[in-house]
Length: 182
View 1 (tube, rainbow, N blue to C red):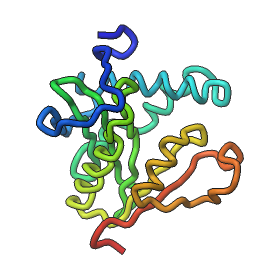
View 2: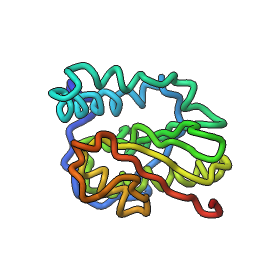
View 3: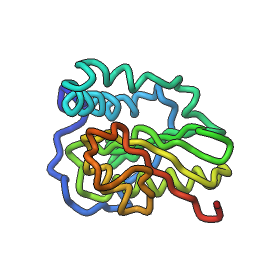
């Protein structure tokens, strides 16, 4: 296990997923299986945005919403495990009666380029639709081009000028109507 993330080092980056080795878990925010992902997410945010918002601002952002907002029936937090190791996850909370806001979409750095981001989105979208939401909303940071590409390539509509400098925009907002929605 690595000291920083609590996860075993992996050489799986870019290798195809084996669905038989994956498990999707719905967990509370304080479950120990969630912590490694949130810890690495905080490091990533500080690395990308520390000069903009100050070091340590990531922890503040990750704790901005009470954990109860990510619990059912209006919210959820999902973790994908491979052979018992937490490798990706994401959450949603109620944004308004028809809209779920996606938060904390994350793939551990050792497991990127394997389709996990798409899998997390699909699982969250399915669960949000099952809970009666007809629309999704999310924001990502201007220094996360991988996330911007993921959302655009999975049917999310940019709520900003795609030709503008992302740094000048700030948080990049996206929406998506769920099947059967508006």
